[in-house]
Length: 422
Image (cartoon, rainbow, N blue to C red; front, side, top):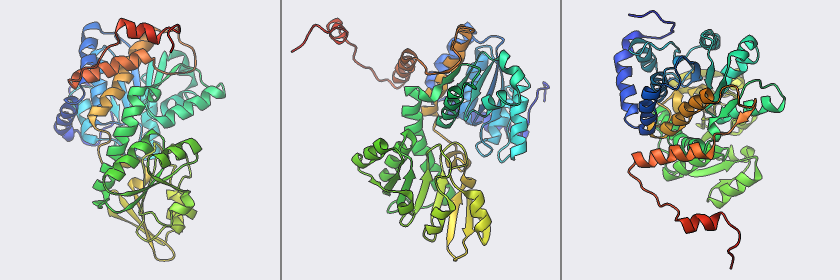
């Protein structure tokens, strides 16, 4: 390497292919590009060290370039062992001199060594996708907490963990719940997860989805998007839920709702998108029919009992790149995709850049906000302001060539007063 930096990359020879992938993704991320252009002029992140634990994809690379344009120094590691794009890592290290610690398929020991390598840079701001970096700061790296201005969290699972920390008064830094931003969860979770999960399933299996009974576990924003897209492909969609309001919404949206213990008897394809653990247990799997396919699109690999399944199976074999076949004691075969990890990243490329454009615009603006408000933010989980949401939405609409109406003075007065009635 021309300049010595810390990194862990699978194959530096992949760098040129990675640069093309980064460039291609960037063409569909106009909001982030506008922010990057402003950052280049204003340098709002000058001398700030940012430690990021995110899915290392071409879209993330564009976020990293926007942050460095703003003057930040970045160290990046993967937030999931199977989501890394090795060519993107090679390009970030070779062409952009970014310290990146990520290898697709890394084991647990390597994964945590990479998290620690990022924290070894002593960041002032952290970015997380799943809250592993923040958790490490609050456990084995507590002495560094005083160095942190703030952190931003990308995904539902991470926000759940952080809110639990806040409830238990364990949280010691202000954290932005990027996932709670409307321009993140209404779009990334629904449209991004919906499309990319089906993409991962189809790339992994080459199955026809039309006519299949497709079971979606969880009807949050990710589940809503996945159920809608699966129905659009011709699948007969079944939803399982624990929340009665969400279950009712699924019924009113035209889906069949039932308990998982009932759905397992009829489903062909099962996908978990809950953010919880033990959603599909061994007992569920025992009741599934021969040839059932199971995948996960929740952040961590705890939704499906993969380890227990491996223990009770008579035989396992990798039948396709992202498909493991489990031969059960009774002779039926069960297929688990992507080792029970995020199937949209384990077998495909994750969300399209068009939708990550808004998610990462939130991340970039959150970093700027932390710097501008350093020392004045409360120690809690913070939701990004509606004003910032609207700013991102306006930029996205403008980039798409879409114009909207504006309230007249009379309309604004009517909406902010109480005197006018019938």
